[in-house]
Structure formats: C-alpha cells, structure tokens
Image (cartoon, rainbow, N blue to C red):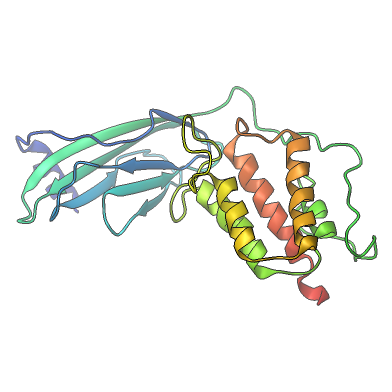
Length: 249
C-alpha cells in the first residue's frame, strides 16, 4: 500500500469497531503477537508497522489468514511499537482502521547470564573420552548437552531449536509461562518440548540427557521469571551440544 492510499484511507470517516488484541507491554527481546478477533468471513486485513522510524530492524511476520500479526524487536531494544490494521470487506470497502501500541520495556540493568553451578556433571556416555567440545557454551549447557548426548540426533537438536524459535514468535508464539492457563497446554514451550521428545520414542540414554540438561537449567536459576532471551540461548546451546556429535559418527 503506497503512502497516498494510506493517507486517503486515514482521512475517511470510518467507523472504528472491534479491537486489536495485544499485550500492553513486553520485555525487551520478546516477540509481540497482535490479533484482530472481530474479523468476519470475506474480510481482508492489511497490517502496517508504523514505527520505529530509526534504523532498528523489526522483523514482521504475518499469517496467511491475516487475523494474526507478529513483530519481533531485537534483543536489547526498548521503545514503543505502533501498528495499524485496515479491514476491508469482500467488496474491498474499508470497514475499520485501528491502531495498537505496545511498550517494549528495557530492564534497569543489562541481562547477564546466571552463574553456572559449581562443577557441573559433564561426564557423558563415553566416560570423558569425547573430543573437546568447541560449540556454543556461553551458559555452560553446551558442554553438558554434548557430554550427555549418546550420539548425534538431528530430530532432537531440531526440537530444541524450534522451541527457541517459538519463543521468538516463529512460526507462531509459545511462552514459558501462562498465568491462570492450562499447565499442559502446547502453548507452553517446555510442555511442547517434552511431548515432542516423547513422540520420538528415544531410549534411556536420551532420557538421561534430557534430565541432565534441564536439571542444569534449574540449577542455573533460569525459570519462568527469567528473560526470554536466556531461555532462547539455553535451548540453542543445548542443540549445539548435540551437533558436536555430528562428525563423530
């Protein structure tokens, strides 16, 4: 949609109805999910990111159905995200123009990784005979995952990376915690991970790997109240540890 059309539509005496559903605020690094639940059959929704106007890269995701819209501000950025939705009926007539603003909050202090627990158990199925691990390990979980993974398994690594992507809103949004929500909901990323791993019917060695990795997460103090970026990094490092076995087959 060009700027002239946008200005013409904005000037129309359009009745505003319905409501964009979105959180009032999110922490820095979290994806923001907007939805327009008032859409009717035949409606066409056109979403537009109105700001920021600086050089910040904001990733935009739009579902094929049009009623959902996700934007992904970069980690460390804070400010206001302002979006607009223009709703057209089946005859391409404007039914509504609505705007939503979400505040992206920055913490008072930079996010520092928790201190790893002393002497993490890194002994793996090869009793310390594995080659030195050189993958991602900023949180220390890379080496724990590497040492306890019985072998390379692309499916397990993919589950961990997909979980990290879900926390960022790709291809849809999952969360670490739902207040007053179903504790078994697939919208909870760790519930989803557990179900996906169970579906692979892995042996006891992979169950040991799962226990070691997530016990380490708890020992580090990464919980439902931790920044989403930490959970994302943790999951990606866990996958990297599995990748360390790729060339050992």
